[in-house]
Image (cartoon, rainbow, N blue to C red):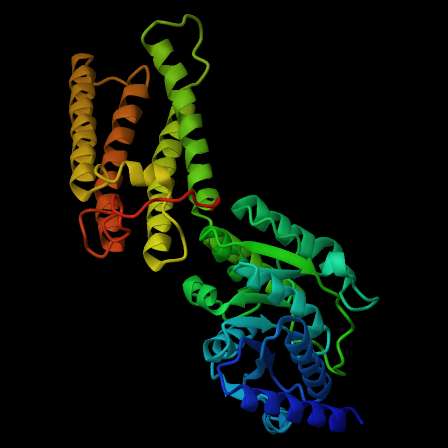
Length: 425
């Protein structure tokens, strides 16, 4: 009965599109991999959503099944039920959705899983939000309700809250359920995001990049039902949880590089500063930090400096790739962010370090080359030289990332395009 009803609705939906004779307003995209068991229900539900869209918003629509290599006949059934099947060769949840979204003809895209766990009729409210001017609308299962058995307890109470919390800490997206599979976005917003995650990390990637680009995001309640399949889901909690987590860090140079780098430099400055005051006689008594601590400080200083160079490199890479906005502080100093500036600074630090090491050698020789009473000057000047070398090499790295341009921000349009505040990350 359900299959027959679905076929009838498919005919009505297709007839409406033909009569409209125009490009559909909305494309419903479903990733599919051997979903023949749940496909009739999902198609019926999606067709009901299209009917609601016509009634409530006056919009036409289509259904795209992004097939990821099904071998159970899902493609033929989907076509029979009124969908347009788009084959996606690259395997993975994200790859299938990206392929389906690329093929979407509508100006709005509504996506959801093909396992019967989501109600596409709830997506009508999402499309309405897009029509009001938002770029992305997410479903929130914690607001809409989760049916008993629909989500494992570790996902519901640990995985999803933890990952969504970290995502909001890093990127300030303001989304309460960043991994809900029912979501909608404008087709032009999809093009801007440049999504590439082939696996389950696609869910995080879309929210992160939307936050980085300051797209207008909102969310509405969405319910989650028990899926209709009699086989295990494609989701693997630990594997996919790690893929989400590592993606959060890969897109957050602030937290991966800048924050640890600044902390390391601050600690090194404290150790060196206190030790130097004792060395110069400004502070009396036994030195608080001995030789071992000064060596640790040198290690922290070089690592911290390298981390900051990597933070700038990762940030500029994101700007150049188009999924990140340039930080205003970098835009204001665009004239100084050049290869020549870093070469001059690096060579000056190297020169200072070498001159200092020569002075330490002379001082050592005047004492008959006996063991030095303190290693602080040696460590300080060696650290200075190492940081100088890293500055020189970092300058060439930034030039490569800038497209082999000595002006690091030239490709980002610094000085000609207004800079907007970027999200954390």
